[in-house]
Image (cartoon, rainbow, N blue to C red):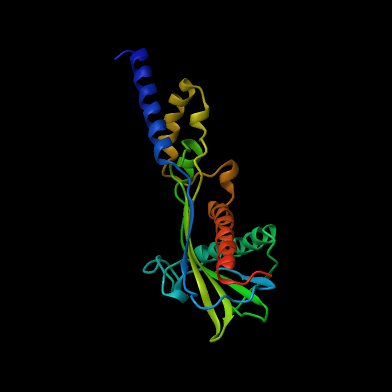
Length: 240
């Protein structure tokens, strides 16, 4: 095979890789609400109290990461610290997103309570998968994407006292932006393919990837969850 033929063959192979990457690399953010409250409409809350999301789903009987690691939850101290930060960011951004929708909020930590004239939102981080940073940086288009799932609950004061009136299941994944190789001329991309083979399984981080992909996922998730909570309030409460 001549050098020209090899170059053509490599170009076609890389082009095929990029097409496949584009097809499978769709970003996704999804929140499913699970209806629980079916009684009379509740008074519209004066505000929503947003609590930090818990590090795991242990409190609701869900812990997809149990069975490995250093802690009782199957997670290392580093992973738990990351989840604590993600849970805080998710709650912070959720409060901001709700405020932008005209819903007054306040932020708290600790055991969930429902003060008079309010409702509360709590939740749990179920899974955090950072994916492959090298693949995201070099190929992009969703290849090596990170994923995160969480659960959330809306609490209110009912005739039976403080209770969960709505639940949410949330999933999100990193977006399909192009990677470094896809922005290079085809000749340079061919030369860079060797670099991809060297780092694709490594711990490479660069540019925006230096920040936590889980934190980015939490911010995307917060917007979708805010939409769902806004719709829930329209469904189960009397409007002021």
